[in-house]
Amino acid sequence: MTTGTDRAAAQAHCRVMRRARLAALSLALALTVGGAGLAAAPARAGGAPFPDPVEIVPAHSGMAWDVFLASHSPGALVVQSFPVGGSSQRWKVLEFGAGTGVFLVQSVENGLVLDVAGGSTANGAGLVTNPWAATLSQLWVVLPLVPGYPFFVIVNLKSGKVADVAGFSQNLGARLIQWQWHGGLNQIFAM
Figure: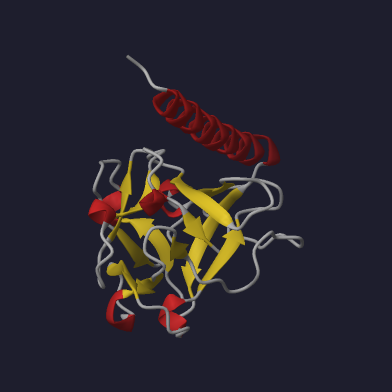
């Protein structure tokens, strides 16, 4: 028997994935028709919807995304930690070409961009920071959960999976991963 909650979650999942696919299609069309290559430097849109920089806070824990140990090394883990406002917890959300709805997320601490480890499409793959390499695993669709409110779902363009705090953990140092959308508060982020 399907409950109203199950139906609502399924409908929300469909909306998130539809918007992510449309954004990916729009980007592919813009790159094909416009003649631009993915290797082009990302451009910040003049009217970007995010202040610069932001703190990204998981709705379930109230902690902040953090570059582990403020590392400057490629492949540095992204974890959650107590919000202290340091540069390892500040992120620039930069639109990849005006009007595409596709973003890259750059660490203020190390200048590296949010990426899925190894470009994986698997559930549970870790989120890390890497040098900009113009790969789809470094591009994200940032979808408002409810228009007009600062809560977002962050969808990886390559995998279609969303940013997630592993295991719904509220612990200091819990890893950020990608996972299929299930609607949990560990997949919803305030910015």
